[in-house]
Length: 351
Image (cartoon, rainbow, N blue to C red; front, side):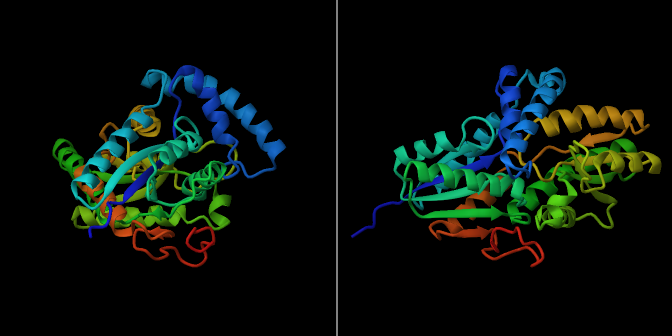
């Protein structure tokens, strides 16, 4: 007798972003209220979140999000990835899959998505962040919020969590392919080899010092992406963007890396390798703000590499992650084993 086809709900996690000018402030408040972002007591966190969201919403509304029509394209781009993954999974004929997008700080968030998942009545759940590199500020935060909301509605079923995939083959290959398309063009137009910058979102140093493996995983991703390009002795560097506040952040900053490129009189090809779809940090911060900054530095040969998005290679990599680990009912990296050295105590496969 044939076994019934299992239904799997795949949850793609992402940060989220405002969907209108009016939602910029509440989105920022939601972000800074996260205890994984501001690690202070609730009263202090509430005060700081209120203050920062009021101040930054005025700036973001007038600058970053204004460039994008007063909203973030993150949901639309994540939804395109979800649709591509769902189609690819169901084409394999290894069960029935429905892919849901779940945002951490703006709609659709865990409370809404978990109810939609329960209504669909799957046999098992797969949690898959769209962050290749694990951080307490992204993946752990998303998992915690999901767990909290599923308990509220008694959504209790076998759940596999993919905590990270910093050197998963599809992600690495798609990133390298995107670099080479732009690199070849840049080298031809400049007349010499450009420097490749792999820019990730930064974090305060104190978060890394407490055991967050994000920086280490970003560095591992960068090395493997560069190797996958096939370039011999390429000129490249990793750097970190989006620094805010007074705390000391991991470095070098993308601004510092661009200044070095300008000083060395070479062109630059920049890939935001910790992002898997376009949003404000790629379309505004890199494409507009860093490009303008580079020009002021005298660096006119500036090329931005697109994120992996719905690249067939990347989506097939995600599909393999799902199929290889479906139904295991535990937290796993893409290899099935802990990736991080033992000193990274915030690695979620060790906690």
